[in-house]
Each structure stands twice: as structure tokens, then as C-alpha cells.
Length: 130
Image 1 (tube, rainbow, N blue to C red):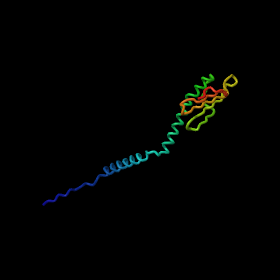
Image 2: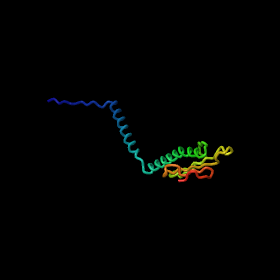
Image 3: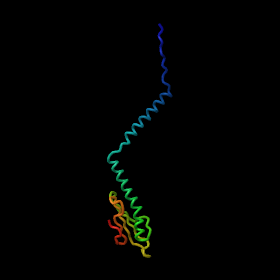
Image 4: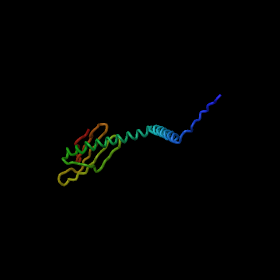
């Protein structure tokens, strides 16, 4: 009776390294996947930031054109900005050509709920009021 013994070769070092690397990658993917979940407060903060950026972008697009249409002068950067960072933004410009008949000050208020300019005042004269 002959008994056959199977001789198992031990795992090579290369194979051990490959298994370890695969294990590390698997753990990394699991950790990243679990940490990608955002809390409600994080999502709310991101939403508020996006909303404010949208309001400001819309105001920077519409208000300078409205001021130029009302005064004939092109405006670029407001000298002052007021906002509650949620529902409205108000851009205020100080006129540069007041000596040559230009405007002294202009303010443009944009409301998010309206989706456009709600108030435009140039030198105390109301041009737009919604």
C-alpha cells in the first residue's frame, strides 16, 4: 500500500504581496464609499452656497445692464453689496462722472423669488419697482 503524500508548496512571496495589495484596495474602496455619505446639515449648507452664488451671478448679469440702460453709463464693480445671502442681493454703485452729468449713485436689488430685478434706483429716482 502506497500512500501518496501531496506536498503543498508554500505560497510565494509575490502572491502574498498581490493578495495584500488587493486587500488594501478593497478596504480603501469600502472606507471611501462609507465616507461619501453627506449629512443633512452639509447638504443644506451646500444648497445655501449654490443659491447665493446663483443670486449673485444673476445680479452681476442683469443689474449692470439695467443701470447702463437707465443712465447711459457702463458700470463694472459695485462699491457696496448688501444681502441676506438667501433671498435678495443689492448692488450699489457710486458714479464716477458726476461732474460731467453722470449719476451720483445707483442701487439695484434682485430678489430670488422674483427671478429678476425688483428695484432699480438711480439718484433717488425709482426706475423699477416690483
